Image 1: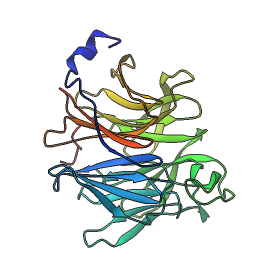
Image 2: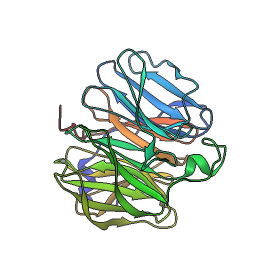
Image 3: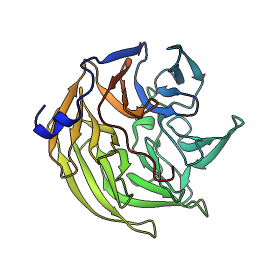
Length: 292
């Protein structure tokens, strides 16, 4: 604990390792209706499924297009960022896959990394180049666009619009509780920025919410129901008060990529960290989607 405000978080002293055996765990997403969690193992080109009621782990999809980040839309459908196919997809109720975005201004995306869905149905995603830098997390290729940007998919037209173009390696992103602001991590610059979100789908501002140290390689993030930001940062999950103060850390032996709140009360934090999937019970609950 770094600040007395972290005392309210409480919860278990036990951090449970649910599974080990991945090469680079990413993109955990919890399905409340089925009480299961799906996450990515990017280099092994697969997605795994953990059943909360039985504890069983099995394959969800393989090959999986070197999927990285995942989330759910307002209808509970899976939204995935595929490094291999360089696209954002939606898995329909019948298991078919719909392509949401794969190009911007006629050029192929780099390798979509993480995504969030706003209550108006728009899908926002980051597009660094990790999936085309080498064959480890996708397929080596030359970029077609002029950098690594943040995009929005219009819910009415499907148009892919660039909303931020001044990032080195944009990564995790999360909306504030009222969706009026958007947090975006820049892994290479080791900071998280905070933007104002406007009704027309544009962003403004972009001040640095927190600047990390050399060890803080910010990746995925989520908010709890009090607006605190829980961010993957190297070998720790870091918890920030809404005013930007770092109030606590949860250290793990593995490099942490992403996290999600789940469980019946949304008070179980699931953490994807290199070779393993972890969980810890907390006294706080994850933010409820605005559309729920």
